[in-house]
Length: 261
Image 1 (tube, rainbow, N blue to C red):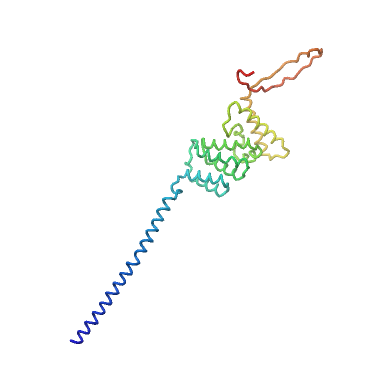
Image 2: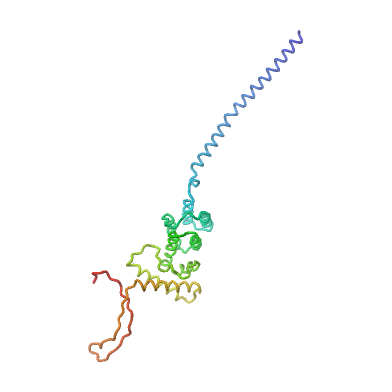
């Protein structure tokens, strides 16, 4: 009996140690579980906020493209140009044939780049010319036409890279011009083209383009300019018995509003 009692006591002590060990492990597990849950919840919360606040994921292709044009206006470079062109090329239906006013505003916002003659801008305009269509392509041509009134020589150097070899753009205006002022604007362009062609050394391709532009302008001017000519012989001058003859010279008479003296 003595040995049996001792064995029972030993067995009881072993079981008590086992139970205490299990209790200690359970306590440690519960104690460590709290921070793990908190970390996971914090991480999940951060992920939800970042997705919610990420405006780029909410943008359409059109909005992303317009944003790239805004960035290009600030810092025109080949990387931004490539990103914009690749985005538009991958999504050709972004702009249809109807005029997009936001696109027009972005492109005409590059006016200072024309004034500063940024070579990178020429590449952007040429690339866009292969992707835009309809009225949106027309707006691109209108913007290109601004260059004629800013600096004709720079315009010729840039526009010679297009496919418009006949210079159909010559009578196009970038800005809205009142009808009664168009003729004078055409005269200014005509003078700028003549000054360019009067230079001693001109690239042959640029010379041909400028000549075609001048021809296009001349045709338009002939259609809208008032025409008048004087012909005949001169009568003898008062007090002078000799008579002289004058050549018939065409005279361009400026338009005057009705009722003006």
